[in-house]
Figure 1 (cartoon, rainbow, N blue to C red):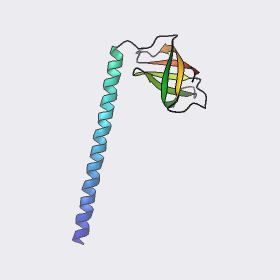
Figure 2: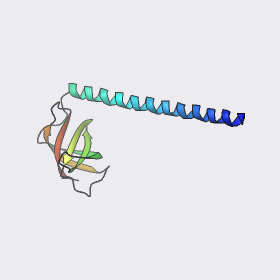
Figure 3: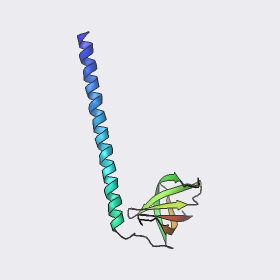
Figure 4: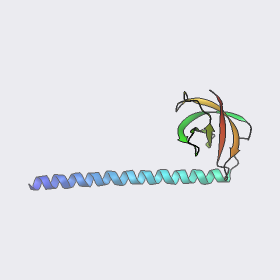
Length: 115
């Protein structure tokens, strides 16, 4: 019986150590994201309004209208691209025309131009 209690205690300590490591990693990811955002606020966007850029789709999100929007980066600058066909998947390279910047000029909205 004592061996069972010791084994269970050891397992609990191991689980708690893993949880602590995962929390630390998540905190590090959030800190890195915050640093990247702050740096983006301090630089000029590497894209221009009306210009078309080619980039890989890293993710999809839903626009406030409910439309599917592709997310990608040009030189670390985030573009949210609308009117993307359903045939486009994460990892595909697309072309999009920049339409507008967000309030802080840390990202931009674009419209799909093709693959």
